[in-house]
Length: 601
Image (cartoon, rainbow, N blue to C red; front, top):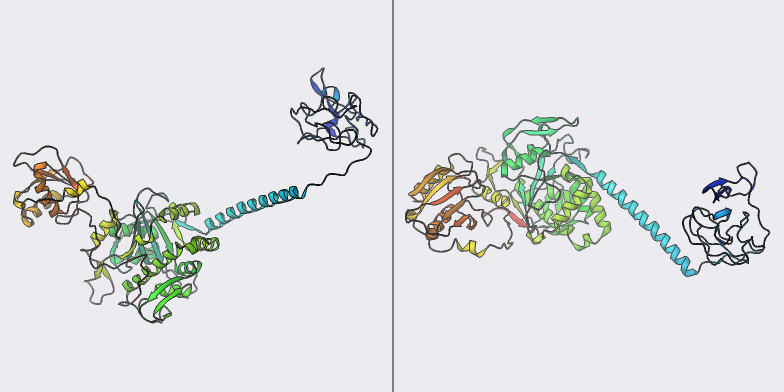
């Protein structure tokens, strides 16, 4: 319908024409006159000439010339029904001067059609089978790609929605870091939502299983320290985030079981992280917490976990009943395996820890196996299960951050992952031993190794030959060692304590207290002259100094000059070696994650 309401098939754009005299478009109310069929419009005895495209749109197919509709590419037909030699786009909005559509007459000067339709139309050419196949394939591929993108996004949102997060108020590293990483893995004994299936459903959920997972700076090795739940320790003050956004301080406690660092009085995983730091001197960067269901679901998601028993087990408490030998456990049976304790070892929590270490080692091997990593179905199931099972800190509380962390940590070879149990002894304050305390002779050494990134496995570490050579060679007699001790440790009285120890226990009578160093220093150092090298080696052997602590000058010293020993923050106490041990203490319980021969006894 045109602007006057007459019912004619008029293109609204045809009512606006360009006036070359005014340089603007004007509304034309009279419809263009249609030429008779088969008669060319004025000025178009030949096929319409090619029009150079300068902006506009697609010409209607079936008309000669370049009849523009404001979009697309031109494609008209000639007066005799053939395709025009060059249908194109007209200048501006597709109209030529004087009302014609294109030079040479897409429309005639009087407003007629450029080239009339033929009296009969040729049938529309059908696309070749090859072209149809290409179009179908491209269209299908496009749909698949779009569907995949939507699926990935939906999966990402689903996995993100699975994850529960808690702000522990401790630990600040990004998901990936260039330095060592410490992750506290907490298995809670909460029965919430389990309908009393495994005991008291009102249990607040204590730290039943706790493993401090330390990954070395160079990602060459990792150490997993199991912390017994019944170890007696101190729990520091703990600020916890409340649902309304406020912070509540839960008071500290002394000489209590470690497992009460979670759940008791509303303590959250941040309280357990603080307790671990106070106990070991190692600061956890992140935490991951899971309940009973996690063991069942994850073991099922990976298709089962292989375990080994050195004897038959029939435990009515955990409901584990397995014959001697190797088995693949999943679901309820896997949970029963990690919960059993009365039928293995000494029947206590330490024996159960050994079972859990065997189980986790085997699960790691299974997860890193080709069968799991190359199966999209298994990986998807594992990702969905893991995100549902875990509660993590806000620092790694998204699929992206968790995947970044997993990718970073996966660089560690399984053969260089060691599970070890924090060294403990029976609590001497109890007549009937139900709790344990730190073994003060072994635990500090183990903690020191973890803090200083020393592997418990036989990972070869390069050491400069020049450093190692400083510790080799003749050593002076203690009576001939002259040294002044400076305190840069920040520990009150450290210099005098060291001098007393050197004089009374080691026979270094020519040692003196030089007071405080100009500033606190991180590492202990021993400065000496070339002609004092034998004295330096003797003192290094006494104090357990690493080769890196020895700083040799370039000029010889006077005969009775002192060496300078500056105690750093790595100083613990007089008589305790400064250097980090290179081997784990004798007799500690440990297992290599790659050891498939371990069987529970």
